[in-house]
Length: 310
Image (cartoon, rainbow, N blue to C red; front, side):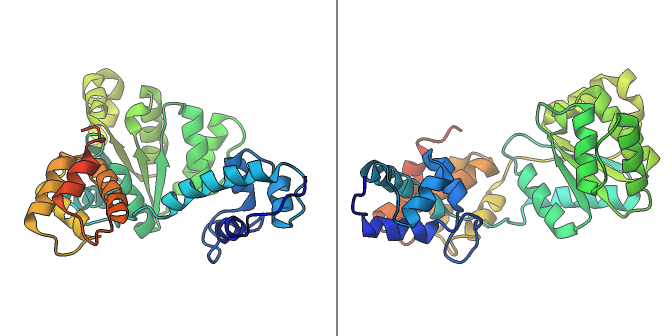
């Protein structure tokens, strides 16, 4: 088939989609051809042929799918960026990590889901230039953990566990660094002990274990297995739920000088969760765009909060 292209759609598509090796941040083109093709369910060759106006397939079908994808992608590109605010949680995490690094100590940071732990940790790691941040998931084993630490250090991760841990100790010894392990509550008892022995004991590096309240329960209630780990903990930081002041600082990073009742509506709807507040702000932004509003109001906030699980 050699059907006539929709020139308007073609222009919109390639304002967002760059060359095969171009990705986000390349001028006005924000996504590579390869990623666009994968999102559409086509090969890169199809998108390349479409760009060169030489596609021989069903152009109308391709353009219908492009049009639907563009609507979704343009919404994504218009999502609200919420800057990191100096909340009480961020300040407490920064203090705990700083002590662990300065004193080569073990710190434990406990907070409920949505308390802003991961965002704060990523912010600290970006600022410090010396923090190694491992983001654990349920699949992590001792081997996975050590290989991830080796990767962050830029050392060889192949070989047996003894060889890998030896390289990690060599790389960390004498280095002004701190290892932060997010969602450490997913780690096995043996993995926690390995962090204490390899990273903290042998290399003299500070370790920060961050997780849900079950992490504290695990450490405290398996005393026989973790007696040495528990005795090394020099900092125990427990994060409180987001308060009204934190909510105002986060919202004010996007919308300045809002009326008190609007700020109250944000805080009340978020229910003490930083994560919920950020999601709420994104949906409020979408509602403002749809309604042509310049600033948030209580009605838009309540409407945006109706589909949030709190």
